[in-house]
Length: 222
Image (tube, rainbow, N blue to C red):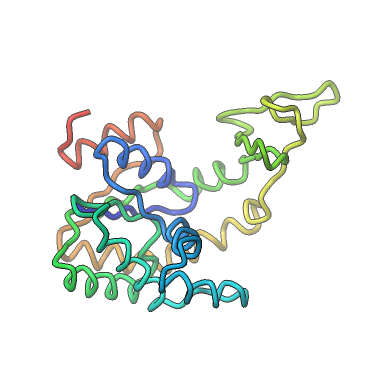
């Protein structure tokens, strides 16, 4: 089964991809992870990607596509795959279609995890991460609160270190991130919708309920 997940930052897409990957025993392919893997393994696409990354510039689409070709051609993906975070725009979606045609593969379903912007903002702005790199525990001030010190400050419940907020998780930046996502992704929803591939799943509930709904869409027993 070949699956593509769409979802805004904070929609829970990564969490659900990992769960579906484990349930179906399919590789979970995110562009970020593939980049790091290709660079680490010194593949042809990885070497090209590293040259751009070392310059601090975005990796071009043609290099990303070459990296995905390496991975999708591997025995690991012979029974299917789960795409997460790629494609991000219409040009990448068209390039992906060309690649899949070349590999004699095609997408079976595109799952859009739909969450209102107001809830996404609440989820992102409330995230906290342990500042100790070796720990890295993640919390949320409302949904998974950390412990509080005697002075009322927040601390990691695991190791006691102070908590930090990612720079792009600040409220003034979340709106811009969501606007960028909607500007780039709406064409993808229309693009795949015309081929009857889009299945929308509400991402507003509990993770277990969302996962159950995804399995229902995929017609897979829980």
